[in-house]
Image (cartoon, rainbow, N blue to C red; front, side):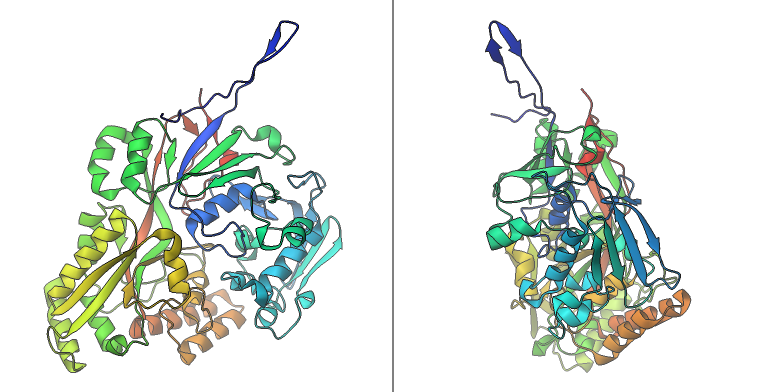
Length: 526
């Protein structure tokens, strides 16, 4: 039986002939995949971020156009030297069990994410906080973190150095609080339905893998009166075509991604319900540099030269992507002109000739190199990697294609899985080049999928972190990106655009460069 587009759950009770009925507004929402975890300290994917945005609220949040607005904090002050942030918490901020959200809940969460025992892949997001990095490396105790609860409604955060993007950074799930009592009571089971206590507009009701995650409106949320949707069902769709079919059947109101093979069909038949917008993200190929056959940068450059990015963006992704020869997205804040691969404007045939010459120079005979191209389940990714395999044939490189299910794919890469070349994407958490370039610092084992180590790169990133002048800092970061593109442990392919299907009945979904769409800002037209 098909699920209704707009569900009306009617309950009737009779007392002496009197009946009462009420209707719930239900939003069936497509999501990229199931989460590997609901512990927001261990999340790392966009699909997980979509869930966390509804379950939790940080000190500040992004509204439906991605502007930073007050969340749990009703106001804040920044010291003249930019090192101390003092947040005043709203007194009506509540957890889903009715407890008050206190400053100590943030301190507990920030200490937990830096505790090495938590093994949080995103711990370095909060490294700007004083002593955070040293704590995460086991050199200091969590209690020494620069976050202090002055009282229940006053939180003081001290930074290592001025950080221009700190408030925007706090909108990320790493900036969310935790309900200490429930975490301590349930341990690693605190995210289970019935155990999970959250402070966002919604609370977890059920989680059925490969089916849906159901969240119900949090009656204790401080802005509950303005939350128009009562229940949201996040439904995983690794096959984007399946979400399209269910969207057309009226079974879901939105899809978080598009099947680009059907872009022409969707535009013709669904009109303005097809949303394509600029997005702060890069689609790229990590290369396992410690493998002997891929250890030479000349080999990696040759592989990059052979990839026709314009064809991929136009033919495979149907203009929903933009070709790139840089890793940091163009137009990002606090940067300027990007570094770029030197063959960006060369004809593809000339690039193929140059690639063959580089392989010969590196001692690779034609036909002797075979690489595995790995991707996570998606027709778009499959078609991309298949096309890349065909392009590599033009320079005498053979390939095999390997598909992995999405739920284990990113864990495989984080855990130093045995791959040659794999597919990855990075979506900016804040508009600053550091949020892209930090991925490849030697000690960033959570996201440095190629396991590239370069002392000069690390030193440049450290220098950038210590440089206060924004223009000088941008120059240092450009040096780092230039070095990254010379060594090429990752091959940048395309810049993302966000692609979504959004029903005409769904109000409040606004396209934005961060592609953030919290359910609390939406409503459904009757």
